[in-house]
Image (cartoon, rainbow over all chains, first blue to last red; front, side, top):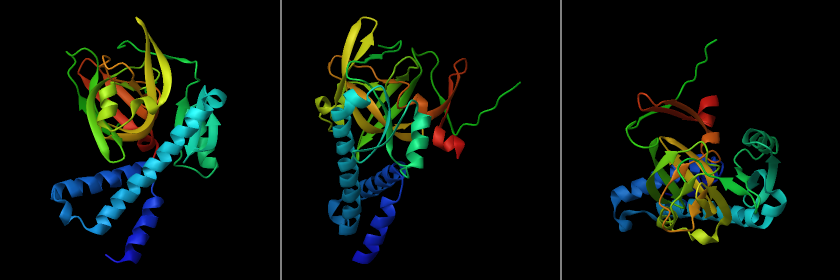
Amino acid sequence: MSVERLEIIKQQIVTLSRQEQAELSRFLAEQMSKDNAPPAMTPAQSNISSNIEVTEETRRVRNMEWMKANGQEFGGQYIALESGSLVATGRTLRETRAASRAAGKPNAFITYLPKPDEALEAGGWL
Amino acid sequence: MSHQLTFAQLVNYDPGQSGITVNVVIGLNGARAGCEAKIDTGSTFCLFARNVGEDLGIDVESGIRRTVGTVTGSLAVYLHEVNLYVVGCSFSALVGFAEDRAFQRNVLGRRGFLEQVIFGLVDYEGKLFLSSYDEYVS
């Protein structure tokens, strides 16, 4: 595969949603595990897989750092993060997702962030 | 007045087992770890045994530490962002891994799981119906 074609594929991958990227990553991992022989993996396949993982890991680490640093200020509500940057906040997942989409970040990671002193509830199994 | 929902997935679980138990795969950076988890509407977050996180290569205690109140006291957990795969549905979620290695239960709670799915249950027949919310509305 040419370098140009690989770059086009990479650019297309970046536009996928996180779920789609995870699905692609899983597909590539399955393809490589089927071969079960690292020498059979082309450099292009290796690059695609490792680039997805590096991008995903960098994004995740930045989100985790943001949540750790801002739990006091933003705890007790939903937050939408894009690679360690706050995109939106809200009282519910629905509200926050709508705000995130309105901000042009439909694929932001959205979660409820508990306050540092908030006691989380356990259900019947704990 | 009747209401109708359509689901993408159907799971037949054993109604004779304690709890509604499903298979879960947690993914992170290409690594995956599988376990069984009980669906728990009363649990704020999805919680997993520490070894599940460690199997994924997570430094569990590098996460966001929070306390979960239980019937018998409290439990420290560390929250991490992961990918959850449950019965054909996948989503990103902040989930907790127990600090105490002796804690060996896994639960799928409200934040991160129930809020992201359409969920139907016929416990009499051991049938669980599921769709991701995104799939449901698209």
